[in-house]
Length: 201
Image (cartoon, rainbow, N blue to C red; front, side, top):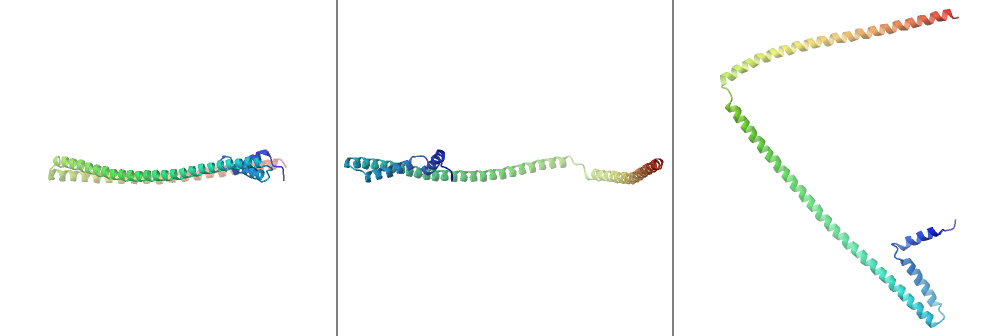
């Protein structure tokens, strides 16, 4: 196993230290101070180490208290954000419901307007509508024209079907002619090859 580099040591200490508040360093100092206090030779030196331990402990307690306050503040902020989020969700849901209701009202208003326009149009048509005799006469004329148009349509469809069949026969003839030409070309090539083979033994 290779030697541990300074970068790895620093990285591990930062990971252990958490957010970098120096708690790990303070605990190490506290342990060292405690060992020195236990091994102190004089009362003055022991008192000094004791004061250092108290100072380090107070720093650790202060850091812990600050961390707890930050933790509590974060929890309150999370609750506050959750409440704001729920209020926003409720507002969005209410807005969606209001929009849906407005859309229904708009569709109903459009339907009413369309019906009124159709009623007005029908009223105008009824006012300008001819009498029954003229309508029946016009219907008879239109029936005759429709019959003529139907006959013309049938004639055109028959002619189109005939042309389609003729075109199909033409395509088949062209295909057969093309096949015949290809066969003739193959035979000519085969005869030329055979003649060349006989001329070049």
